[in-house]
Image (cartoon, rainbow, N blue to C red; front, side, top):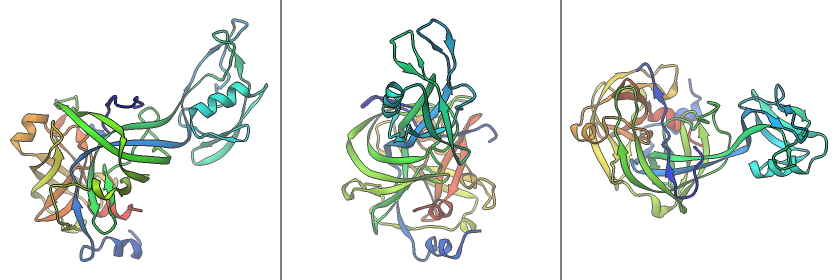
Length: 342
């Protein structure tokens, strides 16, 4: 998911092959008190991870022409490197510097399985350029396209995606250091087909920052928008619905088309399960609007976070597409998104 500035962006969207909160939380999502503006606009999302994420380990050809694996069985996929020789690792360039400047031993502070551990490596002077190497692939950032779910008119806070952003290689939830919502220019849609989810194609403009991301968790990303960035089909906030009030039947979603314009499209909520084990899969929805099926084939990557509205109330957001039935997918209850709102 690492892309240069202004490059075509990837889209955040998981796929599915198979088609009790505290009193304080309950008060925070009371439908009598919370009015939100539904989103629907596709935006660019950039995240910088806390530390440097290990994607895997490999070989180093030493200056003696022998093959070494200095990180094998010491570092593993999913490890998060926080420090190297006492220096905090802000990005992969900092790690490269620490490796280059270290002596015979590189001491790392690593988070593995939610535990902080110490790891010692012996770098190898490589045949390729004579520099120290430890034979790891790492990443420190990711970016893509997703959809805003709601904006709170009281403070311009927002929620988006309806699911967390996970590293594509390790499958782990990204530990957020910082993040931004930026302007995106949608350039088209690759249509979904059975077995192949489509995607919104677009370009990110990192120079045009729309807001800051403060949280990445299992139910979405959250933060605050600039006041000028809070555009929507809806100019007024609408009530939200608790999970127990969502019913099967007709509803609509708001999402961006291939030109980046927000549209309202008919769907059917086929099943509702407030007790489903995954917070982001409480509803099963099906696209019934021929316009959207003709243009996108159904649900595509990048539509993750598209708000679901039923009976004039915001009830949730699209989260997953069924890979074998691209006009069908999962949705999250807005109640679940809000209980994870910061």
